[in-house]
Amino acid sequence: MKKYSIYILVVILGLMVSCTDYLEFPPEGDVPADQFFQNQEDAQMAVNAMYGYLRSWNISAFNYLILGSIPADEIQKGSSPGDGSWASAYDNFQFTKTEGQIRSFWTSRYEGVNLSNQVLENVPGIEMSESVKTRMLAEARFLRAFHYFYLVRAFGGVPLVTDIPPGSSGLIRTTAEETWDQIEKDLRDAIPDLPTTVPTNELGRATSWAAKGLLAKVLMYREDWPECKSVSDDIINNGPFELYPDFYEIFRPEQEFCSESVFEILATQVPGEGGVSNSQYAEVQSVRGQFGWGWFVPTNALADAFDAAEDSVRKAATILYYGDITPDGDTILGVELMEGVDVPRYNGKAYFPSRIPRETGPYGCDQNIRILRYSDILLINAEAAFHEGGDVATPLNAVRGRVNLDPIGSPTLEDIWEERRLELAGEQDRYWDLLRTGQASTVLSGYGFQTGKHELYPIPQAEIDLSGGSLEQNPGW
Image (cartoon, one colour):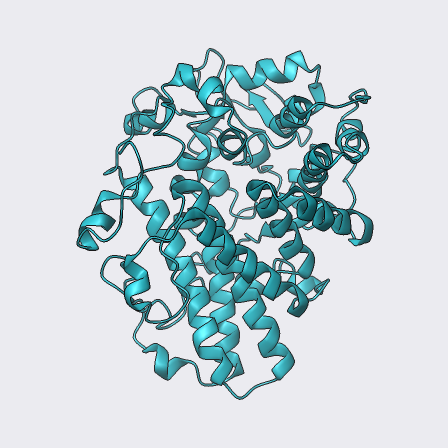
């Protein structure tokens, strides 16, 4: 199994300094930021901290998976009956503006923004290689855009904190359009200063293709179809990507950063360093009592969708049932009774084979988190082409052909959406897609979704209180 260099400290000395009370960035470490940013080595540690934070509990575990998965029709809480019963509120849209995971999602993303802002604020003044500096600043812009991408989808317009200290901007919500504008600006500013490729020992750092891929996705959400098609065409025609032939293998450790990887979060165990071998993305989703906690399990509705499409390849890779034997030789056991499903099952994309030895860290801490795959770019391109009158069938059928499904001659918009559902199942996209496409009001109505309220999560009430009422609550809350 490969090891890479950017697993250096998740939290570096003195970076996460306090900005405003309501954003609550607690100081960590003993060295003030103004004493830390002295040389290129300090700057590199700050950049490493931005990346290391991505695999932390705050960014890649509970709040990320709960808000991005459970409310949709493809994932439910799972686990043993009674365990974490509070999370069932997300299955039936009974969560409130005081629920802790909503606030955790908000504060953790702003902590990520803060790490980027620290680099953007402090690195320009350091005497160091100008080319290295330029790249570091571009990486900070990319990751700031990445965090705001999650914030705007969850909450709509949010405070745009782009400097340190943030001043009054930290207490005022922007509009959703202004937030999207900032995301797009950061990505466009980053693209020319990012490398097209990185050496093996830097895999996991942003490339210009990763920034273009995220930009294409942003443009899809903004329904800027001409530009979305242009950017995704560029990735398809000029990028280094191709679909990896074996769908199951994409999610195994040997295929991390494979030909299909546009951007993924590096997660790896470092012997003797439990603090940086800290990703629990796989552990919380994996086989309860055998490998992990057994949360975030595929629903019967998702299994039925695979069956209706006669999609046995992706179903087998996405849903691991009690009693299955994986291609890696593990027999899936775990518990015999699981909340909400008749046959216990687990997210196969988070499964990590037991053949990989674990010396430190939680189960599956070596499992990279696939954020953006080439198949997603192809489906984004197909959707843009549908709206622009271009070739929809070629990119869509490339994705279908990989899993032995017949081509569709004249794909509809619904065909594209369903393909996204099956291809990206369990990868924290379905819920945001349902909201984006306006399907949530019908698909999720039986789960308790209320039109005019649940299109956005509530701004955490604690943040409104800390702002003295300056932050305005979302409609319906």
